[in-house]
Amino acid sequence: MSIPIPVQRRAARPAGAQAVRRAGPGAWLMLLALLAALAAPVPALAQRGTPETFAPLAEKLLPAVVNISSSQTVQNRGRGQVPLPEFPPGSPFEEFFRDFFEQQQQGQGQGPNTPPRRAQSLGSGFIIDPTGYIVTNNHVIEGADEITVRLQDDTNLKATLVGVDPATDLALLKVDAGRKLPALPWGDSDAIKVGDWVVAIGNPFGLGGSVTAGIISARARDIGQGNYDDFLQTDASINMGNSGGPLINMAGEVVGINTAIFSRTGGSIGIGFAIPATLAKNVVAQLREGGKVRRGWLGVQISAVDQAIAESMGLKEAKGALVGVVSDNGPAKAAGIKPGDVILSFDGKEVTNNRALPRIVAETPVGKKVAVNLFRKGERLTVPVTLGELKEDAQVAAAPQGESNPGPDPQTIEPVGVAVAPLSPQVRQQFQLDEDTSGVVVTKVTPNSPAAQRGLRAGDVIVEVSQEEVASPADVSTRVQKAKEAGQKALLLLIERGGELLFVALPLAEG
Image (cartoon, rainbow, N blue to C red):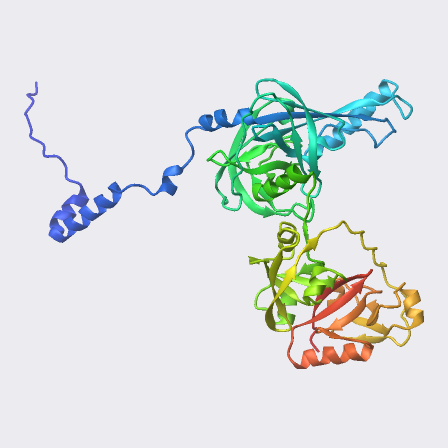
């Protein structure tokens, strides 16, 4: 039998505390400072973290988001003409449902001679004014002869179309509810950052108001939808039927309009795109005021400034928009802007690349006098420009493809890999060139040469070399030789192709 013996145990001292004790009083001061730092308030950024719940935000926002159904009368005209419900751009569901509907029609005896029928499209929208103004996508209501809006309380209202802007895929509707409706305020999409929380609300698959949450994944996305692409990318779930619904920040403000998704399945894979509110707000305001959008017009055709072009022109950075064509009687022509100028800023806004300029110009009021900062032949200058109004122009005809037989007296320029000839009547006829075209024509491009790698082809007309006009093959050869002697790595050419001017920077081959 063992008898328990009481033992007085001293609480173990942490090794760190022992070390502090041995280290002397100075270390105690360091420990106190560390404890004070740990007790200090956590910075606001770290405090935010993942929201505990989106419920209060959703409860506040849902009443202002609506479901939109539009219908139109269509003729059955055979294969390829079957109208489908609205799908996100690029969705494989479109092809699947087209085949399904055609099989159904054939099974029911429908064909080219069957009577007209009604087709329906589903989407989303949101109220921006208590009097009943509603924003949605143009593709949700395009071609509709009847539009119905369903509110959160299941009230169905007939909507009238105030105006559309196909260039930005926006539309404005108006309903009369006989009472004031809840509305959402616009937010500042320019201020939102990658990683910020956002909420998407809409009508996915026609199920009714649904809420999803995510973050801003990227900004300024160009998805090939038009000249004004500047999409916000989000991983908040966006599906078929969400088109036209709002993308909302944590303050309950609309920062985007959900418009498209990237998907191989037709469902959300976390890559959705929204029109930024800054762009949409301006368009919607013009639609509300006059039913259409007026955009600023500068009167230039532009191209990108890549590293090769920047080096050949003496620019330190590959940025800005390179002017290729200046329209006659346009604002740029009147201001003295010339082909070969690089536009670096417009109305105080930096032109980071050629895609940015059309958006900046379009959003500038018609008739406004703005300052345009240029780079011209090694110098910076600023010119005042009074903007005109953009009109829809016809498409430029495509240039002839492939190689043709050499024209008279062709001369091969070895360092760039082209054969060029003067513009004789025979050459003009051979390559279908106008009488007012000047320069020298490319008759052959050497495979794997710098010219071939940069996309030159037979029928291109070289107008300038190193921003100096050329009128003969000898002029081109001389300019190339001077560039090599000066140690230039690239040569800047101004090319006319199919009536359009474009700049091409050619690397100079060794030897």
